Image 1 (cartoon, chains in turn purple, cyan):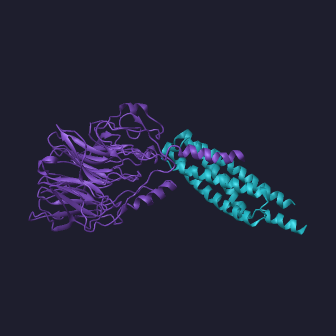
Image 2 (spheres, each protein chain N blue to C red; image 1 turned 30 degrees about the vertical axis):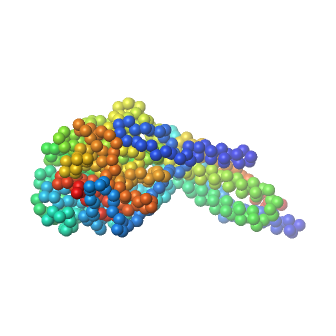
Image 3 (cartoon, each protein chain N blue to C red; image 1 turned 90 degrees about the horizontal axis):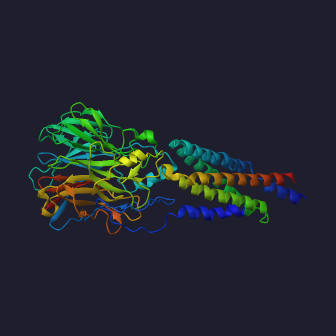
Length: 429
Length: 142
C-alpha cells in the first residue's frame, strides 16, 4: 500500500519531467535551422486562436502597399489561379473523412474545429472579374460546382486542371468564360482513402505535358498504420494526356503547394512537417524538388534526424533522406507558395511568397501571416520578411488564416483566407 | 447483536458496485495485453484497442470509486478496510488516467511508458478488487 502510494508522485515526475519548461521562440529559418531535442509532455501543447470578425480592420501590409478584400462570403477558399485575361479562379471546399481512431482524436478534433470556419464546404470554383481594371472585382460567379473539395489549380493552354481530393479532373477553357461549358473529365484518380491530409496541390510542367500533384500523408506520424501510407506523402508526376503516373519524390509529409520557378522550370514545394514533438520541431520547409528524392517522412526529419515514434524503423531510408533547402519555422502551417514578379515592387521582386495558416500545436502561436522569402541567383537567400500580418491580432483574436498565395503578373498578390472566407489583394501603390 | 449485524450488512458491496468493480480487471487486462501485442507486432490497431479499453476501464473505475467514496462517507468512519479499498481505487484511477494520456501519444511515442503503466494499473486493479471483495465477504460472514 505504501509502495503504491509512492508510485503516483514517481510516475507523475517521470511523465511530466519532459514538459513544463517555457520554450524560447527560436528563429528557425534558412538552410541550417536549430533543432532542439524532441519531447512531449502528457498533453500536447494546444493553442487555437479565437476567431473574430474583421469589422473595420484590415491586415497590415508594408508601406507603399495597399490591401483590399476583393471577394467575401466564399465557402472556404483555399487556392487561387490567375487566368490570362486577369480573371481569378478560387477553389473552395473542405475535404477529408478520417475517422477518429482513439479517444484523443475525438477531443483534439473538437478543439481544432474551434479555430476554423463553420461554413459548409463549397466544393466549387468561383470566378472573380475586374472588367474595368479599377481593382474592384465586380463579378463574383460560380464557374463550376459539384466538385469534391477542389484545391490545386493549373491552366495549360485551353485546359484547366483541378485537383479534387479524390481525382485530377480537367475542363476545356475558353478565354473570357465565366462558367464551365460542361462537366469535368477525369484525368486520373488520386489516393483518397481516409484522406487525413486531403489537399491535393497541383502544378504543371513548363511545357504542360506533365502534371505534379502533392499528396499528403494519412497521419501525423504513422498513427494510422503503415498500410494507410501507401501512395501517400509524395508527389506524383502525371502524364496530362494519358493519366499515367509515377512517384516523382517521396517522404514529403504534407506537400501543400507546388509551383514552377520562372526561368529554370524547377519544381518547388512547401511541406508541412510533423507535430507533437515540441514547439520548435519540426520546421516546415520550401525546397526545390529533386526527381526521385526521398525527404525523410516518416522515418526521419530534416535529413537524418530519426523520429523514434515510427516502428519498424528503417535506417537505410534514413541514410538516403535529403535535407530540404530552406526552413520556414515549426508549426507555421505553410499552405501556399508562389514566385514573385518584378511588378510586385523592387523590394519584393525576387523571391517567394508563403501563406502561413498558423499553428495549433504550440502554446505561443506562430504563422498567421504571409511572408516573403528573398531569393538571389535562383536560391533562397536571407531571412523571411513579413509581407501581410494582422491575421492574428494583438488582442489574441484571429480574424483570418492565409492559405493560397498567387502573384498576378500585373502586380498584385492574391491571398485566400479560409477563416473569414475572403480573397485579399495586395498591390504596390 | 442486531446492531452489529446491520453494520455488517451495510458494509457489503452492492451488486451493481460489484459489477462496476469487476469490470476494471478485464478492461485493464485487455489494455495490457493489447500493449504487449503492439510492442511485439508494431500493429497500430493494438494501440487503438488499448486506448479504448483503458478509457472504458476508467469509466467503470470512476463509477466504482464514486460509489466507494459515498459509502465511505455514509458508513462508520473507523472502517479501515473500506478506506484502503477506496484509496486503492483512487490510485488505480489516477494512474489509469495518466496511462490514457500516455496512450494518446502518436504511434510508438506511447511506448514503453504505456506498457509500464498498464502493468502497474493492472496490478493495482487486482489489489483493489481483492480488497474490495474480501471486505464484503468478511462482512457478510459475521
